[in-house]
Length: 115
Image 1: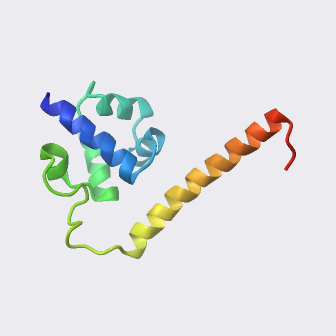
Image 2: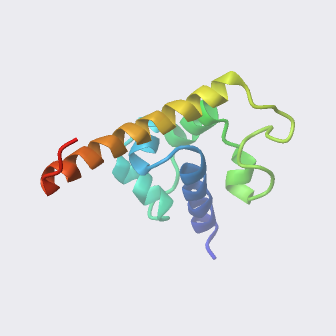
Image 3: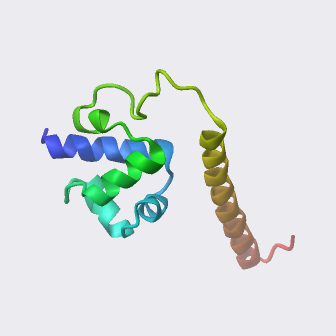
């Protein structure tokens, strides 16, 4: 398997595990969702903007991304969960819940169900 494809697969795993959907990752990295999609499918190489954003904002372990060795989060074996990590996870879950609530409301209106 191509080395770049393995990086793309690890990036996709990282996004799903620690960020959410492609739009969330694109917003986090200040790039388009199309760019994220191309990188994750191995159609484009990861650029420095994406890499720097993930290292800075999500503590991505670059060694893991490039080699598959170690933990996806830099220093994960040594670090404990802190309030910033928890708050970031809570914020992400709150965004997902809001999207689901909107979707349920839209579906209920289309089905003629009142709240």
